[in-house]
Image (cartoon, rainbow, N blue to C red; front, side, top):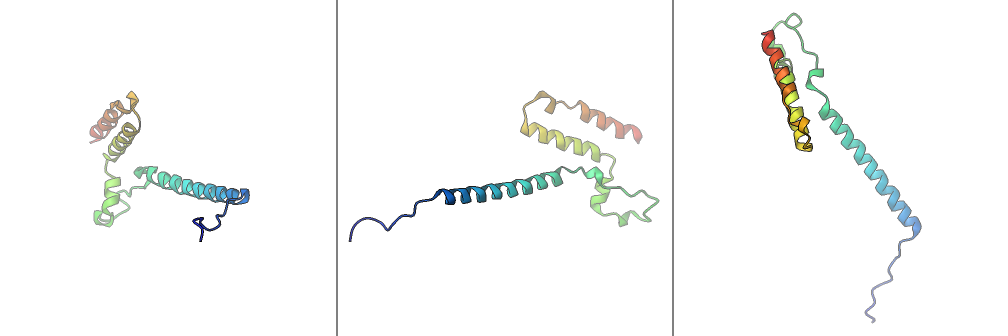
Length: 112
């Protein structure tokens, strides 16, 4: 009995092409899934249409999530979350400027 292992199978160019194609397909599908998840996460909460008092007889008909989305300060919260996200991904000075948040904050206060 010799110390040589069994016959090893060498990869042929056809095998390499097949592996490359499968890897490319898998990565492409993963990229599409990731892009769709990011797109869903990036859709603003304000896109949900808030029901006004005339269309609903009682506030209890609105779910908690709808009530939160309809709150007058929700745009400020969305802007703050966006700013926090930007600040975690970049060190650009504009990511840390809060002028737009202050402007958004002053608008709901004046309406009250």
